[in-house]
Amino acid sequence: MTDASRTELGDFLRSRREKLTPQAVSLPGGRRRRTPGLRREEVAELAGIGVDWYIRLEQGRSVTPSATTVNALAHALQLNETEHVHLRVLAREPVQQTFVREQPTAAIVRLINGLNQPAYVTGRRWDLLIWNTAAQALFGFEGEDDAQHNVLAYMFLDPRARELFGADWAAEGRRMVAQFRSTFDVWARDRAFLGLIGRLREGSPEFAAWWDDHDIRPVVSGRKSLRHPSGERCCYEYATFQANDDPALKLVIYTLVDHESAGAHHGTVVAETKSC
Image (cartoon, rainbow, N blue to C red; front, side, top):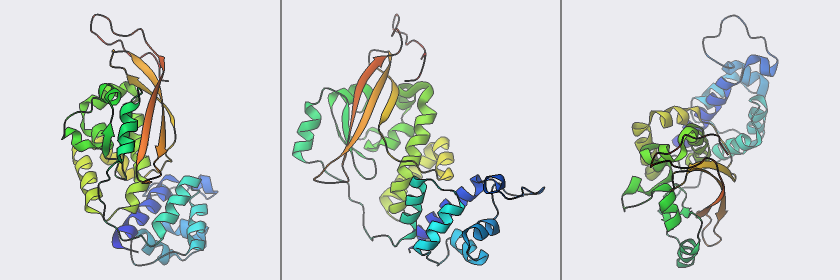
Protein backbone atom coordinates (compact mmCIF):
# COMPACT_ATOMS: atom_id res chain seq x y z
CA MET A 1 0.00 0.00 0.00
CA THR A 2 1.14 3.55 -0.69
CA ASP A 3 1.62 6.12 2.07
CA ALA A 4 -1.46 8.01 0.88
CA SER A 5 -3.57 4.84 0.96
CA ARG A 6 -2.39 3.97 4.46
CA THR A 7 -3.17 7.49 5.67
CA GLU A 8 -6.72 7.37 4.29
CA LEU A 9 -7.23 3.89 5.74
CA GLY A 10 -6.04 5.03 9.17
CA ASP A 11 -8.19 8.16 9.06
CA PHE A 12 -11.26 6.13 8.14
CA LEU A 13 -10.72 3.59 10.93
CA ARG A 14 -10.16 6.36 13.47
CA SER A 15 -13.25 8.28 12.38
CA ARG A 16 -15.45 5.18 12.72
CA ARG A 17 -13.90 4.24 16.09
CA GLU A 18 -14.52 7.70 17.52
CA LYS A 19 -18.19 7.58 16.49
CA LEU A 20 -18.90 4.20 18.10
CA THR A 21 -19.94 4.25 21.75
CA PRO A 22 -19.00 1.51 24.27
CA GLN A 23 -22.70 0.91 24.88
CA ALA A 24 -23.22 0.10 21.20
CA VAL A 25 -20.84 -2.86 21.48
CA SER A 26 -21.92 -3.90 25.00
CA LEU A 27 -18.83 -2.56 26.74
CA PRO A 28 -18.86 -0.61 30.03
CA GLY A 29 -18.58 3.11 29.44
CA GLY A 30 -16.31 3.82 32.38
CA ARG A 31 -16.04 7.13 34.18
CA ARG A 32 -13.09 8.63 32.38
CA ARG A 33 -12.61 8.65 28.62
CA ARG A 34 -10.24 11.27 27.31
CA THR A 35 -11.35 10.80 23.71
CA PRO A 36 -14.76 10.11 22.18
CA GLY A 37 -15.77 6.65 21.08
CA LEU A 38 -13.97 3.38 21.63
CA ARG A 39 -10.35 2.96 22.66
CA ARG A 40 -7.93 1.39 20.20
CA GLU A 41 -7.44 -1.65 22.42
CA GLU A 42 -11.20 -2.17 22.54
CA VAL A 43 -11.44 -2.24 18.75
CA ALA A 44 -8.49 -4.63 18.56
CA GLU A 45 -10.12 -6.96 21.07
CA LEU A 46 -13.46 -6.89 19.28
CA ALA A 47 -11.74 -7.64 15.97
CA GLY A 48 -9.50 -10.34 17.45
CA ILE A 49 -6.22 -8.71 16.42
CA GLY A 50 -3.20 -7.41 18.31
CA VAL A 51 -3.40 -3.95 19.87
CA ASP A 52 -0.01 -2.85 18.56
CA TRP A 53 -0.88 -4.08 15.08
CA TYR A 54 -4.15 -2.15 15.09
CA ILE A 55 -2.40 1.00 16.33
CA ARG A 56 0.11 0.72 13.48
CA LEU A 57 -2.79 0.30 11.06
CA GLU A 58 -4.64 3.37 12.35
CA GLN A 59 -1.44 5.43 12.32
CA GLY A 60 -0.92 4.68 8.63
CA ARG A 61 2.26 2.69 9.15
CA SER A 62 3.54 -0.07 6.85
CA VAL A 63 1.11 -2.89 7.55
CA THR A 64 -1.40 -4.39 5.14
CA PRO A 65 -4.53 -6.10 6.51
CA SER A 66 -5.79 -9.35 5.05
CA ALA A 67 -9.35 -9.78 3.78
CA THR A 68 -10.19 -11.65 6.99
CA THR A 69 -8.87 -8.80 9.12
CA VAL A 70 -10.76 -6.22 7.08
CA ASN A 71 -14.00 -8.15 7.61
CA ALA A 72 -13.28 -8.49 11.33
CA LEU A 73 -12.66 -4.74 11.63
CA ALA A 74 -15.86 -3.97 9.71
CA HIS A 75 -17.79 -6.16 12.14
CA ALA A 76 -16.08 -4.66 15.20
CA LEU A 77 -16.76 -1.10 14.04
CA GLN A 78 -20.33 -1.97 12.98
CA LEU A 79 -19.82 -0.64 9.46
CA ASN A 80 -22.76 -0.61 7.11
CA GLU A 81 -22.50 -2.22 3.67
CA THR A 82 -21.30 0.96 1.96
CA GLU A 83 -18.63 1.59 4.61
CA HIS A 84 -17.54 -2.07 4.51
CA VAL A 85 -17.00 -1.90 0.74
CA HIS A 86 -15.06 1.33 1.18
CA LEU A 87 -12.83 -0.28 3.81
CA ARG A 88 -12.02 -3.11 1.38
CA VAL A 89 -11.09 -0.58 -1.30
CA LEU A 90 -8.80 1.31 1.07
CA ALA A 91 -7.09 -1.87 2.26
CA ARG A 92 -6.13 -3.22 -1.16
CA GLU A 93 -3.15 -2.19 -3.26
CA PRO A 94 -4.22 0.78 -5.42
CA VAL A 95 -3.67 0.89 -9.15
CA GLN A 96 -1.00 3.40 -10.10
CA GLN A 97 -2.73 5.95 -12.32
CA THR A 98 -2.68 9.62 -13.16
CA PHE A 99 -5.89 11.58 -13.48
CA VAL A 100 -6.69 13.03 -16.90
CA ARG A 101 -9.74 15.23 -17.36
CA GLU A 102 -12.32 13.34 -19.42
CA GLN A 103 -13.86 14.42 -22.72
CA PRO A 104 -17.51 13.54 -23.54
CA THR A 105 -18.10 11.95 -26.93
CA ALA A 106 -19.94 13.85 -29.66
CA ALA A 107 -22.96 11.57 -29.17
CA ILE A 108 -23.17 12.46 -25.47
CA VAL A 109 -22.86 16.16 -26.26
CA ARG A 110 -25.76 15.92 -28.73
CA LEU A 111 -27.81 13.98 -26.19
CA ILE A 112 -27.31 16.60 -23.48
CA ASN A 113 -28.10 19.48 -25.79
CA GLY A 114 -31.23 17.73 -27.03
CA LEU A 115 -32.80 17.35 -23.56
CA ASN A 116 -35.36 19.82 -22.28
CA GLN A 117 -34.70 18.93 -18.65
CA PRO A 118 -31.63 20.28 -16.81
CA ALA A 119 -28.79 17.85 -17.51
CA TYR A 120 -25.01 17.75 -17.27
CA VAL A 121 -22.10 15.30 -17.41
CA THR A 122 -19.39 14.91 -14.78
CA GLY A 123 -16.11 12.98 -14.64
CA ARG A 124 -14.27 11.08 -11.89
CA ARG A 125 -13.31 14.27 -10.05
CA TRP A 126 -16.87 15.59 -10.44
CA ASP A 127 -15.69 18.11 -13.01
CA LEU A 128 -18.54 19.62 -15.02
CA LEU A 129 -17.72 18.56 -18.56
CA ILE A 130 -20.85 19.72 -20.39
CA TRP A 131 -24.32 21.01 -19.53
CA ASN A 132 -27.37 22.11 -21.47
CA THR A 133 -29.21 25.43 -21.49
CA ALA A 134 -31.79 24.20 -18.96
CA ALA A 135 -29.02 23.35 -16.48
CA GLN A 136 -27.38 26.70 -17.12
CA ALA A 137 -30.67 28.45 -16.31
CA LEU A 138 -31.25 26.43 -13.14
CA PHE A 139 -27.74 26.29 -11.67
CA GLY A 140 -26.19 29.38 -13.22
CA PHE A 141 -23.31 27.51 -14.88
CA GLU A 142 -21.52 29.87 -17.22
CA GLY A 143 -18.09 31.05 -18.37
CA GLU A 144 -14.97 29.05 -19.03
CA ASP A 145 -13.60 29.59 -15.52
CA ASP A 146 -16.89 29.32 -13.65
CA ALA A 147 -15.90 27.69 -10.31
CA GLN A 148 -13.34 25.84 -12.46
CA HIS A 149 -16.20 23.70 -13.75
CA ASN A 150 -16.51 21.34 -10.79
CA VAL A 151 -19.67 20.30 -8.91
CA LEU A 152 -18.05 20.48 -5.47
CA ALA A 153 -16.40 23.81 -6.20
CA TYR A 154 -19.76 25.17 -7.33
CA MET A 155 -21.49 23.89 -4.19
CA PHE A 156 -18.97 25.21 -1.67
CA LEU A 157 -17.31 28.18 -3.35
CA ASP A 158 -20.08 29.73 -5.43
CA PRO A 159 -22.68 31.80 -3.50
CA ARG A 160 -25.29 30.92 -6.12
CA ALA A 161 -25.40 27.37 -4.75
CA ARG A 162 -26.56 28.54 -1.31
CA GLU A 163 -29.31 30.58 -2.92
CA LEU A 164 -30.30 27.65 -5.11
CA PHE A 165 -30.58 25.10 -2.29
CA GLY A 166 -31.79 27.50 0.41
CA ALA A 167 -32.40 25.83 3.78
CA ASP A 168 -31.33 22.46 2.35
CA TRP A 169 -27.81 23.62 1.45
CA ALA A 170 -26.05 22.16 4.50
CA ALA A 171 -27.73 18.75 4.26
CA GLU A 172 -27.04 18.57 0.54
CA GLY A 173 -23.43 19.69 0.99
CA ARG A 174 -22.77 17.07 3.66
CA ARG A 175 -24.29 14.38 1.44
CA MET A 176 -22.10 15.36 -1.50
CA VAL A 177 -18.92 15.33 0.60
CA ALA A 178 -19.71 11.84 1.90
CA GLN A 179 -20.37 10.57 -1.61
CA PHE A 180 -17.22 12.09 -3.09
CA ARG A 181 -15.07 10.64 -0.30
CA SER A 182 -15.27 7.15 -1.79
CA THR A 183 -13.88 8.40 -5.09
CA PHE A 184 -11.18 10.55 -3.54
CA ASP A 185 -9.73 7.77 -1.39
CA VAL A 186 -8.95 5.79 -4.55
CA TRP A 187 -7.13 8.84 -6.01
CA ALA A 188 -5.68 10.12 -2.73
CA ARG A 189 -2.15 10.55 -4.10
CA ASP A 190 -3.14 12.32 -7.34
CA ARG A 191 -2.22 16.01 -7.57
CA ALA A 192 -5.43 16.97 -9.36
CA PHE A 193 -7.58 15.51 -6.57
CA LEU A 194 -5.35 16.87 -3.81
CA GLY A 195 -5.45 20.32 -5.41
CA LEU A 196 -9.25 20.29 -5.49
CA ILE A 197 -9.53 19.24 -1.84
CA GLY A 198 -6.98 21.86 -0.79
CA ARG A 199 -8.92 24.60 -2.58
CA LEU A 200 -12.20 23.49 -1.01
CA ARG A 201 -10.75 23.22 2.51
CA GLU A 202 -9.27 26.69 2.22
CA GLY A 203 -12.41 28.28 0.82
CA SER A 204 -15.11 26.56 2.87
CA PRO A 205 -14.99 25.85 6.63
CA GLU A 206 -18.09 23.66 6.26
CA PHE A 207 -16.36 21.49 3.68
CA ALA A 208 -13.25 21.20 5.86
CA ALA A 209 -15.29 20.05 8.87
CA TRP A 210 -17.38 17.54 6.93
CA TRP A 211 -14.35 16.23 5.06
CA ASP A 212 -12.60 15.42 8.32
CA ASP A 213 -15.65 13.37 9.42
CA HIS A 214 -14.75 10.86 6.67
CA ASP A 215 -18.39 9.86 6.20
CA ILE A 216 -19.21 7.52 3.31
CA ARG A 217 -22.53 7.40 1.46
CA PRO A 218 -23.62 5.68 -1.76
CA VAL A 219 -24.61 7.67 -4.82
CA VAL A 220 -28.36 7.25 -5.30
CA SER A 221 -31.21 9.00 -7.06
CA GLY A 222 -33.56 11.24 -5.09
CA ARG A 223 -35.26 14.61 -4.81
CA LYS A 224 -34.02 18.14 -4.22
CA SER A 225 -35.77 21.39 -3.38
CA LEU A 226 -34.30 24.05 -5.67
CA ARG A 227 -35.02 27.64 -6.59
CA HIS A 228 -36.50 27.61 -10.08
CA PRO A 229 -35.38 30.41 -12.46
CA SER A 230 -38.90 31.82 -12.11
CA GLY A 231 -38.21 32.44 -8.41
CA GLU A 232 -40.30 29.59 -7.07
CA ARG A 233 -39.09 26.81 -4.78
CA CYS A 234 -39.58 23.64 -6.80
CA CYS A 235 -39.12 19.94 -6.25
CA TYR A 236 -36.86 18.11 -8.70
CA GLU A 237 -36.18 14.41 -9.07
CA TYR A 238 -32.67 13.57 -10.19
CA ALA A 239 -31.06 10.41 -11.51
CA THR A 240 -27.52 9.50 -12.57
CA PHE A 241 -26.50 7.29 -15.49
CA GLN A 242 -23.11 5.83 -16.40
CA ALA A 243 -21.80 6.04 -19.96
CA ASN A 244 -20.85 2.78 -21.66
CA ASP A 245 -18.09 4.44 -23.71
CA ASP A 246 -16.35 5.71 -20.58
CA PRO A 247 -17.59 4.52 -17.14
CA ALA A 248 -16.02 7.62 -15.59
CA LEU A 249 -18.65 9.78 -17.28
CA LYS A 250 -21.88 10.30 -15.35
CA LEU A 251 -24.99 11.81 -16.90
CA VAL A 252 -27.20 13.64 -14.36
CA ILE A 253 -30.77 14.59 -15.29
CA TYR A 254 -33.22 16.69 -13.25
CA THR A 255 -36.98 16.45 -13.74
CA LEU A 256 -39.36 19.06 -12.35
CA VAL A 257 -41.89 17.33 -10.09
CA ASP A 258 -43.85 20.02 -8.26
CA HIS A 259 -43.95 23.71 -7.41
CA GLU A 260 -43.69 24.17 -3.67
CA SER A 261 -44.62 27.80 -3.16
CA ALA A 262 -46.69 30.52 -4.70
CA GLY A 263 -43.61 31.90 -6.45
CA ALA A 264 -42.12 35.34 -6.62
CA HIS A 265 -44.15 38.39 -5.62
CA HIS A 266 -43.15 41.74 -7.10
CA GLY A 267 -39.65 40.43 -7.75
CA THR A 268 -39.12 39.02 -4.25
CA VAL A 269 -38.68 35.28 -3.74
CA VAL A 270 -41.12 33.74 -1.28
CA ALA A 271 -39.51 31.86 1.63
CA GLU A 272 -39.45 28.07 1.35
CA THR A 273 -42.49 26.41 2.87
CA LYS A 274 -41.24 22.83 2.87
CA SER A 275 -38.67 20.41 1.50
CA CYS A 276 -39.58 17.92 -1.18
